[in-house]
Amino acid sequence: MSPDRRTMNEITTSAGDTPPADWARPLVDAAAFAAEQARLAHVWTFLGITADLARDGDWMTASLATRSVFVQRFGRELRGFENLCVHRFYPLRTARRGNGPVVCGFHHWRYDAEGRALGIPLSEEAFGAVSRALDARLTPIEIAVCGTLVFGRFPAPHATQSLEEFLGEGYSVLAALSQMPARPLGFTRSIEANWRLSLHISLDDYHAVAVHPDSFGRGGYVHRADITYARFGPHNAFLNSTKGFAAFAAACRDGTARSTCYTILQVMPNLLLAQARTDGNRFYCALHHYVPVSHDRTLLQMWTYPTPLAINETWLGRLYRWTTDPVRRYIVRDRVARIMDQDKAVCERLQRSVSAVDRSPRLGALEERIAWFEESYRQLMVPPQEPTPTPSP
Image (tube, rainbow, N blue to C red; front, side, top):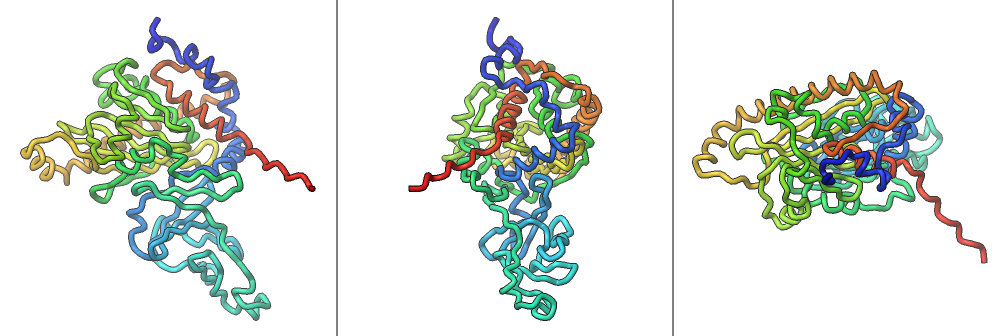
């Protein structure tokens, strides 16, 4: 029996990356979910796109391990903070995005680019000191950018890896594929299921025929020998091609990459960037962000846009694309939304059934990336090593 025809239980047992029997606990236990999110707060996590932060003073809100945060442009720099006034913990930003100074809507405390409260009304009368002397500061988050993608994390002594180190070989691919030729179209969905179930179905190349018969499943089942799976650090990739991911990453680095096949990058903990053919040689990208809300609820944020990579087409094809893109972008958005709704229905049914689960799933060869995701997830759940104290002389 060839390796591609064995079940993933056979393939992964020696590597130890089959999900353990208690894999579903954070899906049904609010306390386990809270502990999981506390660990993920210090992991580089996708927050949004730079198109929302183009002008000085632009800001956007996001969720980082279920905690509300905001990112704002101050001149040439992006800064991030927890979205809580340090006075009475009122949210400083109460919309998805906007522009303007950081001023609390409850008592008009004003903050600067460093997160310091420097404009406190009646500060000496109410608090016995001038604003600066109170040393009231917002909780900062670290911010880094890859291409047009904004990532953040809460600081911690053990969180020393740069975003580029964290993304590894995928950094150049994300940087290339995230260059948006036009303002993307977006939509959101509330999913009554855990975020990991949403990731699982996005990493599952076995369900298309049953769940998406009018789109991905029309051509029948894919065969493992015809596709490429690759791991880069804790992340993974899919290419509907036998060409290696390393070659594609190298082409993205030197600017020669072209859109030729269906491609998916899964970035821990909760981001996917996919590139798929729409019609002819035309490709579109879809950015999936699965935001954990509670143990049984996820917010899906999606953006779709034309691929920024070169495609093989004639001058007549380019003319056709330019004239039809204004319509195509809405058709693509609506088709992606339909596919996501089909996945959403499956995940919500799974959420209702996992409370009785106390054993590992049986993963096949077309579900290998789920096993990889779960292995990376378990590694992120390991408590950080405390620094060894230096002995006294």
